Image (cartoon, rainbow, N blue to C red; front, side, top):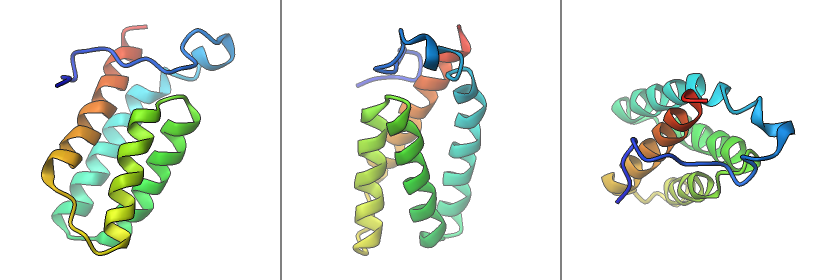
Length: 106
């Protein structure tokens, strides 16, 4: 089990082109987590599907396949009217926090 204290690096971590972009993940992480919490508390499935699709794309394109895969799984489950279990939501949020914490340090 990972915690938000353990670093999570992009597969592009050493690429100079991407390196400067990673700092924005610290700010973006709290935005995504708040949006997830808000949509969950309002049972807004449409907002969650849209948000998960965005997270899947953003984190996937920046080299975080674990986050992209979790977001894809959650998105697919919601689209199929399956309520994802809480541990999957916690895993998504924890991994987003890990990225934020990793790149906040740099």
